[in-house]
Length: 62
Image 1 (cartoon, rainbow, N blue to C red):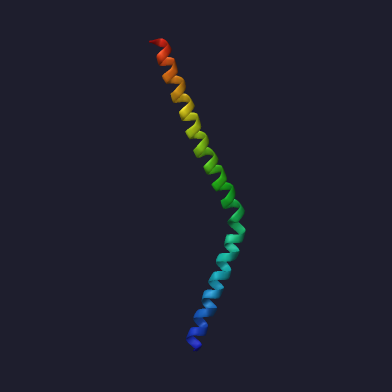
Image 2: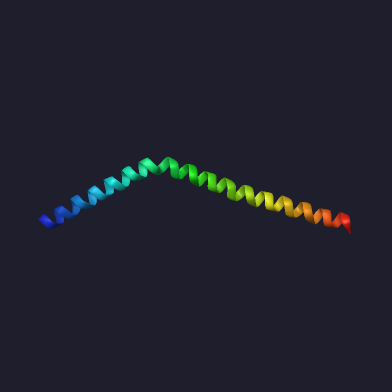
C-alpha cells in the first residue's frame, strides 16, 4: 500500500509538472503552430500562383 501510495504521489507530481509546463508553453506552442500553418499554406498558395503564372506565360509565348 505504501509503495502504491508513493507511486500515486510521484505520478501526481509528474502530472502537475507537466501541466505547469503545458500551461507555460501553451501560448508559445499555439503561436508557433499558427505561424507554421500560415507559412505552410501561404507558401503552397504562392507556389500555385507562380506555377499558374509561368504556365500562362508559356502559353502566351507559344
